[in-house]
Every structure is written in structure tokens, then in C-alpha cells.
Image (cartoon, rainbow, N blue to C red; front, side):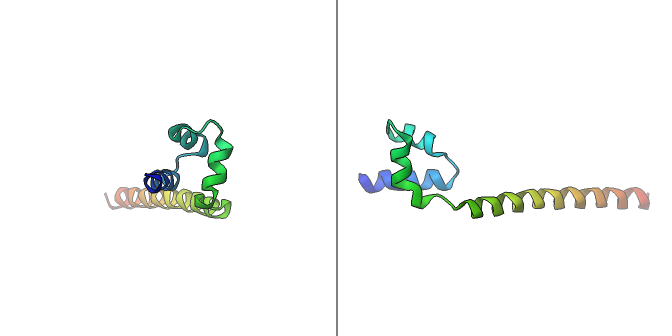
Length: 77
């Protein structure tokens, strides 16, 4: 049962649930207790920052590609 509980915590943290929410889901009264138990599963701040920038640049690239296609379509007409 303990392994299943740990797996649940691992999966939810990897999917972006924050410590305060996880503590509530697990029935911990103090989120700092949850943080001490599962801090090793949290991505580093460097990873989060890199991923945030990567997501933003991917959206920008998509927007610029769509604008370029729109201009090309207008020029061809």
C-alpha cells in the first residue's frame, strides 16, 4: 500500500500538481512534511525554467509560421 501511495505522489508531482495540493490529497496536515518526503521528485528550478522558455518559443515559432503562411497565401492570390 505504501508503494502505491508513493507512486501516486510521484505521478501527480510529475504531472504538475503542487506540493500543497498533494499534501491535501494525501491527508498530510502540513505541506512541509510532504515536501520533505517528495522533494527529490521535484524538477530543479533550472529544468522548469528551461521548459517554460522552450514552451514559449515553440508557441512563438508556431505563430510566426502561421503568419508567414498567411502572407504567402495573400501574395499568391
